[in-house]
Length: 104
Ligand code: SF4
Ligand code: F3S
Image (cartoon, rainbow, N blue to C red):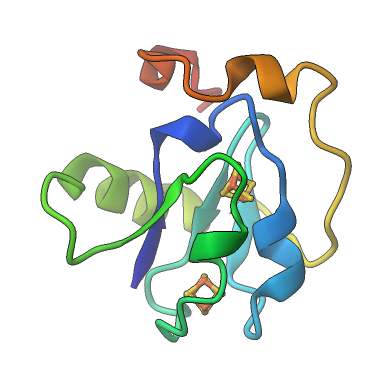
């Protein structure tokens, strides 16, 4: 499966949503997650994210993000249409320590 990681927080560009063939993104207030059981590992979303926030779960060190994607994919609503990113999205791109800002 692919995993949405920290740099999505407060960027939430949503380019990923428009390319996913199985609509497996779920929407929180300031981040999206991927449903690990629905993702077919096609990889098309990874290069589409302007924040480089989407990673394959084969990358080391993603355990926390895998858990968060699985947890919130079961709680947050499915998103199938790309919406507007936050007005200040670009200013959050690459900011460190955004984990603490996740609206859970
Ligand atoms: Fe969707 Fe493919 Fe990305 Fe998985 S890897 S979330 S199926 S676009
Ligand atoms: Fe987030 Fe990137 Fe999608 S910032 S909403 S994972 S395009």
